[in-house]
Length: 301
Image (cartoon, rainbow, N blue to C red; front, side):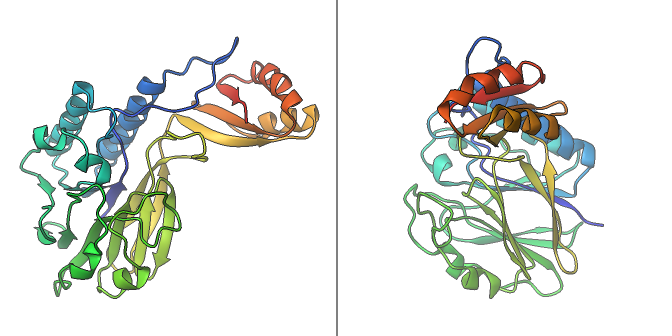
């Protein structure tokens, strides 16, 4: 069975925002936590021996073009190359505002889609034809998908695109297009980036956002990770949770509500950052309760 890992919006160099700090709060390094999440994701992909990796844009963060971010990207691509796992990479709008893509040293097994026009790349061992175009203008408003190549007969066809679609799930337009444009290409799967939620857009054919590997913004709730794609036949998509930090909403009207939610939510080996939704006077009781549950922290509203 052929399996691919679809990742997106890694934003190497970025940090977790609105991380709580108070006496007794578990220590959370907002920069290190993002790198830890990427490391866990990469280990899961390498251990899973996937047949390929699809990176759907925003590998780098436009605000933090650090040597560490570049080193982490080069190391990850080198590890995938050494493991015999090919990569298809497109640049997103954050990459277009960063100097790091020009400094990246992709190995021979990493195909970087061009900026000038959509192109097709083949993975013969898997029978996959990849169609993609990178973002070169951070304010790209053209419908790039409208000009993607026709599917290649006798091959499984996958499209990669960094797009806001019609903008319903994104605050910033990027290569806008419609679901109809994507689904009428005849491709078997569309690997999307730009939206920070793991979001199924269509099932037949399969179109999906991978979301980001860690919850950078305070409103990015729920588990994070990547998508496992099985593209042969009717394409199927499986969510793979890898982030060691998760944000969730703590909805409470009373202290007993707080204790019940702590008891019902399994932290495992993860750090859970609750955002309180309830009376402000419950913030301190919630933080007091968190001390009885290792790995939990509580942020204000």
